[in-house]
Each structure stands twice: as structure tokens, then as C-alpha cells.
Amino acid sequence: MSSTPLSLRVAIVGAGPAGIYAGNLLANAVKERGGRVEIDLFESLPAPYGLIRYGVAPDHPRIKGIVNSLHEMLDAFGDDDASAGAAPRGRRRTIRFIGNVEVGRDLSLDELRERYHAVILATGAIRDAALDIPGVDLPGSYGAADFVAWFDGHPDVARTWPLEAESVAVIGNGNVALDVARILAKHAVDLRTTEVPDNVLAGLEASAVTDVHVFGRRGPADIKFTPIELRELGEVRDVDIVLHDEDFDGVDAASASNNQLKVMLRTLNSWRDRPAGTASRRLHLHFWHAPVEISGDGSVESIRFERTTTDADGRLVGTGEFRDYDVQAVYRAVGYYGTRVVDAPFDEVRGVIPNAEGRVDDEPGLYATGWIKRGPVGLIGHTKSDALETITHLVADAEAGLLSAPSADGDVLNVLDANGTEYTTWDGWLALDAHERALGENHEYTRERVKVVPREEQVAVSRDGALVR
Image (tube, rainbow, N blue to C red; front, side, top):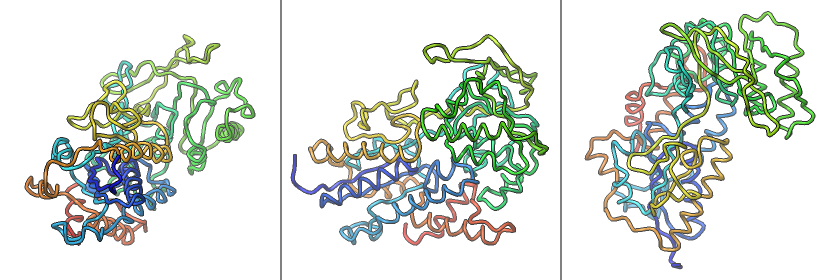
């Protein structure tokens, strides 16, 4: 093991929470050892923050705190005085954001590995997991991830969304299912002060929905929500929550396995005790329902479920009782599937990059973190601890002399320039951020920001407003 202070160049692919946490932890770890590191954070979108910007409902104000934290992490490692004058574009940031660059299209993985001691893959999971039942491909059957991308203003999805259905089924018992159900049931007027894009607001204002049904395979004691998500559901204006007593047979809040579950079961039970409402919209929560088939003549018209229960070993089993619900749309919120990187190893079954605690199998110098490492489970806090595990191994490998020195010279930005890639930078993001905030201040409904949706417009604002490129 060498006692020489570390001097590393590292590429991170993905600028969501997983990638930003990894960059921040790596920069601090090397700094504590008296070394020096240059980190390039590549993102396929023009703006940073990944799933926080494009995967969380716009009516979650607490997410702003996470964005602010991620912003501080990136902004904290500004100009590196040690490299002043060495970089061809002036002072070199310790963590340099390079957006609108897709690895596998604008740069190959091999080109990255030639220019850095290590590459960390943090591409996350943005696709819906499959639901293998008949009729799942009928028009009117949607993946929740696609709907979330639409209402969050993702630049690579259509600007419109079909919202003609009056009755809608949402399959899933996690936070994404609740986000989808809440946005569908909520009156658009109550979203006017959020950062929801104008095209989305117009679409929701024209929505025909009256009833949203949320279905879970297991019972109330096995929900995957968080208490705050569930509580928010009951605070939606002019929407009645409808529950069914049969789903709660044998469920005792006092004997719940943890305090969070106790709180949520008490919340559900309080809704059961409410008198029948007269709201214009209803949100129905169903438990012990396993989806069997989606039916319709040319588009979704109904969905069939089998009632479920658990056996003596706690395993979920069917009861042989089937129920049909008339709906005109189905949203599948049954999980996400990892976003692969061209030429990187990939486990097609699990949707992850094969790895051992972040070290990619049989690929020295290649690492993974976040959902692409362990699968799409856990909250933001898990992502941070997950990144720490990966970075700990990377630093240990560097100190043990196991990382190969870069074999290619020159700044990667020169390669992108030669390719004609219109990449964006941290200064460009600051310009886009300021632009969106100005749009919000001047909007007819005063908002903190109005998201710019088209990719080309984001890139133009970023590149025109950047002070340094």
C-alpha cells in the first residue's frame, strides 16, 4: 500500500442522489487523506438531481430540502486552487457537472475508462417493472413511471397525457402508487402554486376522473407507504377516502411490527370511521387483491383481481374468489427496472449491474451505487449509506494500487466538443435554475419555479447563460 497522497480522476455516470452522494463522499474522503481528486459527474439530462427532479410529485414541498442539500454538495466543491491554470478552461471544479451527455451515445464506456482511474455507474432505475398479466398492453394501460415523468415535466416524454377515464385503477402499495393516485384524484386548481409545468396543469384541468382505485396484493399491515405520504392522501380537498371493512379483518394496529406501521394503521382506521362523504371525487383503497387480467375491446374496460390471503407460513396465496372492476385506465406502480449502461455488465432478471458491495464483477476500476447497484428499493437515506459502501471500497482499491492510471490524455470536454455534443455545465444549471425561478415569479399563479420542459430549450438556456464552459 502506497503512503503517497491519492491523486485521482473519477467519472460518475448519473447525477441523481446516488451519483451526487458518491461524488461528495469521494471528494471528502480524498481531501481528508491529503490527496487530490477530480470528479466528472455525467448526466443524460441537461439538469442535475435525477429522480428528485423528475420522479417525485410536485406537491411534495419537503423535497425542496433534499434538492437544497444536493445543490450544496455540488456547489461546495467549487474551483480547485491546486489546478488553477492547469485546466484549459480556467479553474477546475473538484466535482464538475457535465449534463446532456449520454454514455453509450455521446461517449462510450471505454472512452471514460481510458480517461479516469475509476468509473462509478449511478444510473438508477427509471423504467417500470413488468407486470405479466393478459391485457397489460391494451391502450389505457400505463406504467406509473411514464405518468410520473409526464407530470414532472421530463423532457423526453410526450407533452400530453390521455385523461378521459372516469374510473381508474392503480396497482401497487408503495409511495409511487400513492403519488399517482393523489395526482389523479386531486383537483388541478390545488396544484397551481406548485412547480407543475403548464402543459401538465392544462391536462389535469381537463381530466374526467371521478374515482381512483388503489389495489394492493397484501393487507393493510403490509403497506409500503410512509406515514407522511399516507397522511397527505387524507388531506386532499374534495376527495373522499373509501375503505372496506372486510380488508381489515384480524388487523390490529396495537400489534403492528413497528411504530411507523402503527401510525399508518391508525390513520387508515380513522378514515374507516368517517361518515360517508359527498365529495366530487373518491379515492378507494383496496387490499388483498392480486391482478389477474385487464380486459377491453380495443382499450381498457375492466380489470379482474383474485382475492388473496396468507397461509400458515405467511406466504401470499389466492382464495379462488375473483372480482371485476369497471375502469377505463390502469396504472401499474409495481416497481422500477434498472437503467443499463451500454457495454457494462447487466443482470437482465434483477435489473442491476452485478457487483459485490459496489465493485462490479470482474471489472477492476468499475463501480456501481444506488438503485442500479442494489435494485429499486429504499429511500434517500439508504442511497447515502449505499454510496458510502461503494466509495469506501474505491478508496481502499486506490490506496492498494489496484486502479490503473488513465491511458488517454486531454480533457473529456475536448472529446465532446469534437463530437459536437451540446453539453451543459454547473454554471449552465445555475442559469437554468434562475430562469425557471424568474418564470415562477412572473407567472399568473405565483410559484417558486416553472419548469422548462423541452430538452432543446433547457440546453439553450443553460449554454447561453453559463459563465464558464
